[in-house]
Image (cartoon, rainbow, N blue to C red; front, side, top):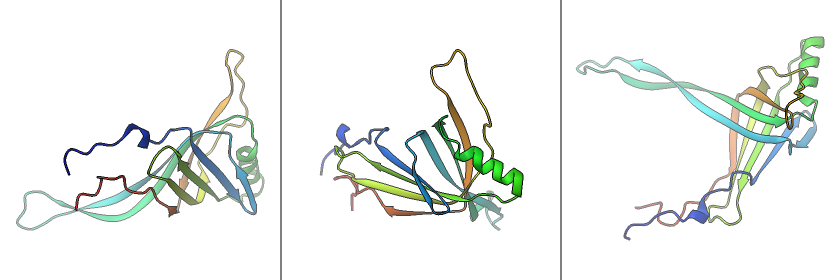
Length: 159
C-alpha cells in the first residue's frame, strides 16, 4: 500500500461544531460556547504479581470531567446555582457535541454527556479594559454515549 499519509483536508476545522444543552425539558442550542473539552479518566489499581518485579494495572472504574468557556451572555448557569442555593436541589443536564467538517472524509461524530453537573461558576463579572466577557465552567458527567462516530480514513486500517 506504500506510505499513506493523512490529507490536510481531513483535519477537522475547530470551529465547525454544534453544542446543545438539555436541562429538564428545555433544549438550548448553545451558540455561546467558545470551547469545550470532556475527558474520560480510568481509575486503575496497582496489582502485585508473584514472579514479577513490577506491578500490573487493573482498571477499576472511571470518572468523567469537563471544562468549557462560554460567552458571558446567558444566565442559565447562574440560575442553576441560585436554585441550588435556595432549594438544595442540584441540577443535572445533558450536553451534546457534534463535530462535522463537510470538507473532511471522516464525516460526523456526536457525543452526548449525561448527568452533567457544574462545579460552580461566576455570579457577576465586568472588565472595563476587556473586549468581551467570557466565563469558564468546570463540570462532571456520569455517563456518555456516541450515536455517531467518525469514519476511518482510507489507509488508516492496515489489516
